[in-house]
Image 1: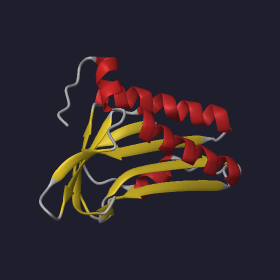
Image 2: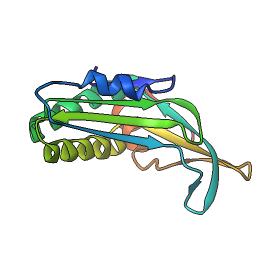
Image 3: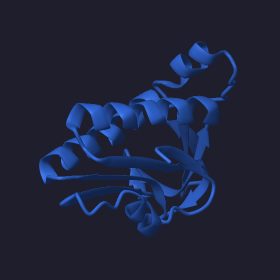
Image 4: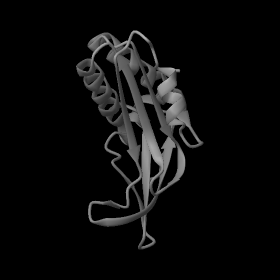
Length: 153
């Protein structure tokens, strides 16, 4: 498993074990949590919509790029979909390598590329009762590229 999408809570312990290697002296883990605010709004919960065929293929490519570019031993990324509550883990990235520097660099690369390249849409539900799709600057590009996914903004 390099990249996957989950509709159930992410098991971070299992993810860390999946990249464990006695030849590695470093493990870097990034957890992205659902927080209670964004751009001046009080957030109640989030909803993620994922176009899995493209996300899984491109996500695996991002992992391969990180392994090659930074020389790390193992890496994975798991992203949630569906309705998430405050404090839930939305995404986890785990990277193991011989040394910490490469692991930190690869981890940052994976999360940054995941956020910009994958067809994952986020809808924020606010305490006020309003909800809106946010950070969708790549929505149009993903829809145009695949021609298979309609997304209401």
